[in-house]
Image (cartoon, rainbow, N blue to C red; front, side, top):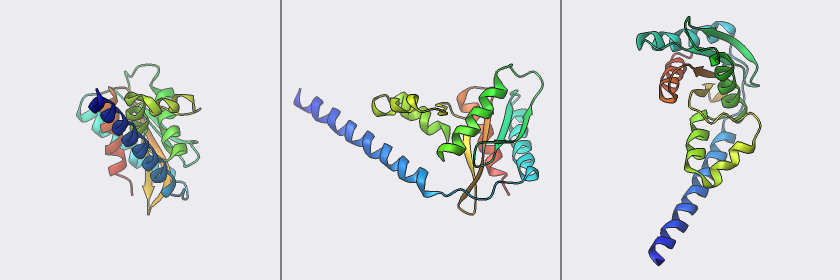
Length: 163
């Protein structure tokens, strides 16, 4: 019984330390000059190429650091909700300076992670990632249309193409 209590306390402390580390990391990257429309289109094209390669129908949204939409593209045949979800993921990643998967993981863990559900603009679903150039957040990408893992894979392809 005592060992179970010790394990629970250790897990709680670990959760707090991880959450604190996320807060520090989120604040570590400053905002930079917004990415250009040309660069946003390039990022989106790489993301959509990844979706097409895997035969997934997706939408891609690119925002500036303030979460304002810079570029959006939706593949034919995607579900109707994807545009709102993709934009919300990009906005969340830009405003909170972290991938939306971080929220997804924290919420799934429960406990302190559930506090994110009270914050306006948080999207706890993989597929939103800040776009960083020279150590500064210049925007964010948000993808929607597949599973959370597929959305994340497509978003990462876009991030990898960032100039």
